[in-house]
Length: 163
Image (cartoon, rainbow, N blue to C red; front, side, top):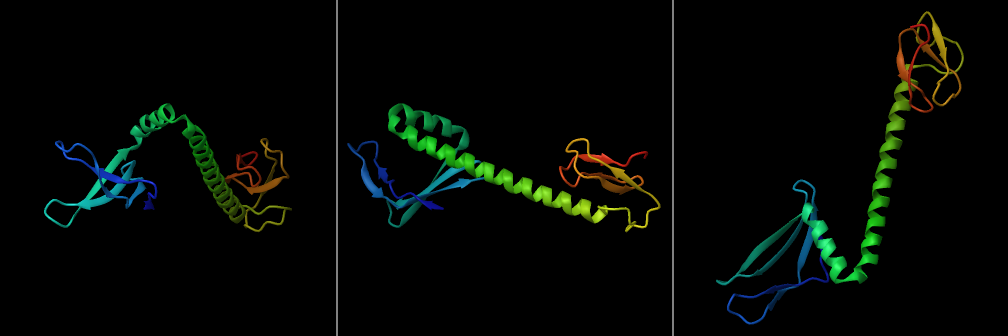
């Protein structure tokens, strides 16, 4: 949980004229399972001890909060823009990681299934067919009869010629 260092909890009864400070110890966490931002803190209870409180803000309410921020405090727009840039970079990094892993898996699977290079038959098949990928037009690849695989260079789906 992230500690909210610039936040505080105030409490006021219906008959009291003003809010009274309770605590500035609170934290927040993005709850992926419930798609919410959960803010937690504790306050003194009336009978002694403490009461834990959880404020769950649904992600569908975040646009309302952000709109209120930008309307009431336009100076926050720069901060929100920077946050959007950080979020976008994070998403692009995740996409790049997944794409890189996918390419590694595809290349590993293809290289294990299909011998590349010249015609020495390493798989014991009677015939190897030469295929040039029509998508990337990379170097020729060699495939045994009936084998459907992906291009080693770009991942496009290939089928052996004459099969």
